[in-house]
Image (cartoon, rainbow, N blue to C red):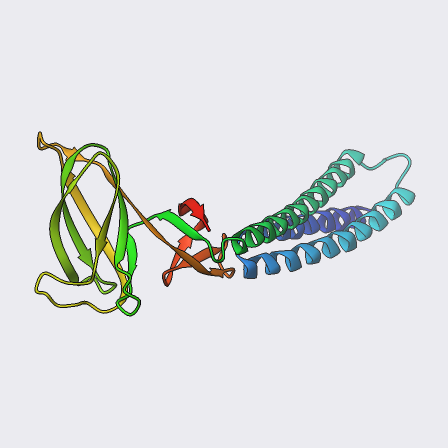
Length: 246
């Protein structure tokens, strides 16, 4: 009898250990590849749970049927293991349902992102696109907290300095356009250019200046979560969007 009891306890403990590990592995993430793996792990965890639970009940029933009436077995241990099995089953089910909710959220985000195609958006950022071919200068929107004199540095995607200069800013929003002409009168090629700006007020104190860029959404990158919008050849997160117009 003691051998059967030990076997029953080992089966319960081993099953709970395996199922606990499987349940932890099913915690969903936001990347599509990992989410698919997690869904498969959740299904495997449920199958393992069902098989081990059936084995546990068979051994429990057999042991109870063959126990010594004068020395009954301790049922507290069996009850505790049954509760633990139920707890693991609920956790696996919860993770599966959570994965379903995340998948629905990803689908909703993708659908929402597609609606931006063809729209002109203004987004927080300091990288703008220069297109000499279409006569489109790199343009930034600058928002100064107070009147200031600003030092501007524009660099290309490789980090090379293309332009440096100063400009006067009013309090509020204004635009700054760069035609691509460097300090040495060299015309820089088409591409993405990044602005760095520092400003000081009349009293010499620093003035905060935020930068935004504007462009037409020409594509949506659905391989990322959340999706990224393609504006001027660069990826912009939905959280960066500040205004939309058509």
